[in-house]
Amino acid sequence: MGVIEWFTDPANWTGENGIPVRTWQQIEISLAAMALALIVALPVALTLGHLRKGVFLATNIGNVGRAVPTLGVLTILASIPEIGIGNLAAILALALFAIPPVLTNTYTGLAGVDDEVRDAARGMGMSGMGILARVEVPLAVPLIAAGIRTATVQVVATASLAALVGSGGLGRYVVDGFALQDNTLIIAGAILTAALAVVAELVLAGVQRWVTPRGLREQSRAQIEVQEIPAATH
Amino acid sequence: MLSTLAEASNPWLSWSYVQDNWAELVAAGKEHIFLTVGSVLLAIVLAVPLAVLVRKVPRLSGPVLGLSGVLYTIPSLALISLLWPIFGLSPWTVIIALAVYGLLVVLRNIVVGLDDVPAEVLDAANGMGLTTRQIATRVSIPLAMPTILAGIRIATVSTVGMVTIGALVGYGGFGTLILSGFQNNFWHAQIFTATLCCVLLAVVFEILLLLVQRLTVPWTRKQAG
Image 1 (cartoon, chains in turn purple, brown):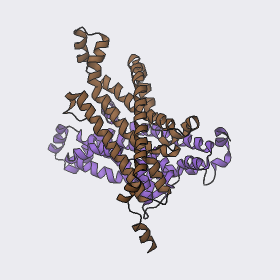
Image 2 (image 1 turned 120 degrees about the vertical axis):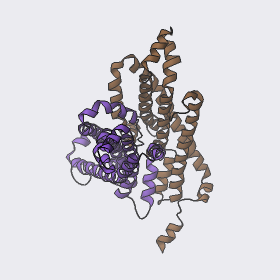
Image 3 (image 1 turned 180 degrees about the vertical axis):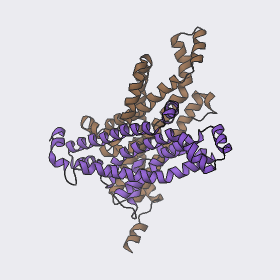
Image 4 (image 1 turned 30 degrees about the vertical axis):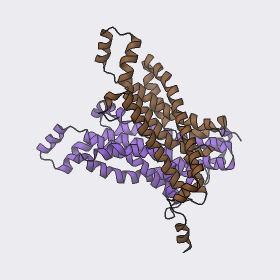
């Protein structure tokens, strides 16, 4: 069966193995991983960035993330009996790899706020929390958004690997295809995983633009471009 | 009782595993290095002419970098799978797929590095009577070199990690050991040792490339790469 026939076969669009279900599984795993990563990374980065402490951690955690193979972490987690194969191992592994871009970008964004601006806010009588919430975070939004976007796209792409340790998602087609020596399944799965990642990238690029205050768009672009040397290991 | 027994006989760290499987580990390491170096070299060879093209036709810079950003999001699992019907179960399937990612990082850094050369410096070089070729070889490229080398370093380290996915087509270096350890009843020692070796290899490459950077562009020693 050819790839086009595979995609036009209604049987592949329904049921537990259908494209909608598999796509949704991958999105679900990705969203859970991102939620977990944000819960961990944002408070740490906001605290460190506000206090201007922990430069070393914030700038080097990305290098650590690059050096550790995703497949290794995924497999290690899935081999721990308490975690087991399936979605939980995938979510935990993906969350671990989503933390560095969020942490580094949020930290850099906060640390990049001018001292004069912070001083002025303090002079106006704002508390530390007030400065963080009403001055530093709004000014850092472009970089924070860029970090979350980078991390999310990476998670959506890497989520396809989760099929190697027995979880759902679009990677299932590829892994099952290799197991069954079914070329059509392999290629169809590859097209679907690639398409989902590209769509995620395009949608999130739009979202990032949308959440960035207009006055900061031009100014932040140069800053983001320096930041955006990709760290993905998907 | 049975599960604790199984747990006890399946340690994460085992020196006897390393001793018993030394030859296999060395073979996987050699394959891993071969696949990494092959991909990065291919990436550099392809990135240089593309960078020259982008410099010659600046209008291409936006679309090329934009497209490369989108291509970069494609998972390696997908790229390897798409190449496998063409190149089959061969190292080329892995090398070409991973070279695409390396290419994007290296190309981006060459273009950004050259763009960041201050206009005043180029003016001064021009005023001193240097030819276009001399400006390129003596001014622009040396000044862009730290950024270019950083790109090669980032590409190399992330390639070390991604080589593991090559296990899908039988050429994954340590990744093949990770996956076969997983399929072999969650053999912790093999999974963990192979993962550690992979991290170690990435660190060794990082240090070697930092040394290259120190030797070739010593004036950046104080700056972080």
